[in-house]
Image (cartoon, rainbow, N blue to C red):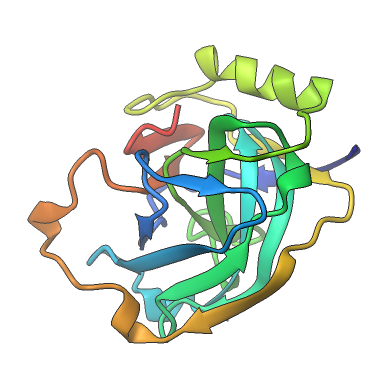
Length: 211
């Protein structure tokens, strides 16, 4: 089901995950084949969402060092002018599980420390049900690797992460984007440790622990 093509991604030396995901969060449950909403807002930290700009938004599984693309939700959306996306999760991308997360990959902003790589932002892990697929053996190994991968607060090597891309994936149905009314702004104090995002710092996951 999954290809083995690996793409090396450098991990940023400073948190670049300024896209604060308000849906899904750790308590969210999406259902395969039923419309779902991804929403976000600026976390008030540099770089701004305007700097982050157009981004590819996808569903992934994996750990802090290796991640597998399961479904591309939208190939490009400007996160500074759009605050939500409606899409239909493809039920065939995996089983019922709480190991899924959303990854935002900037198409214009580069990692400040290693500019050959894009800036990234993530949601927390969330659950999906009514799923009909299975995780491949390599994906299961990635999930099992969460116990040994860098976790929240750690700062360790290596400086690169391998990302496995799923063999051509696509959203079920056509994603539609709604403008800024979707996400209400909150103060920085409200962005607690259970917020739906994490940043990557020198090989470590910081912020809300996805794992």
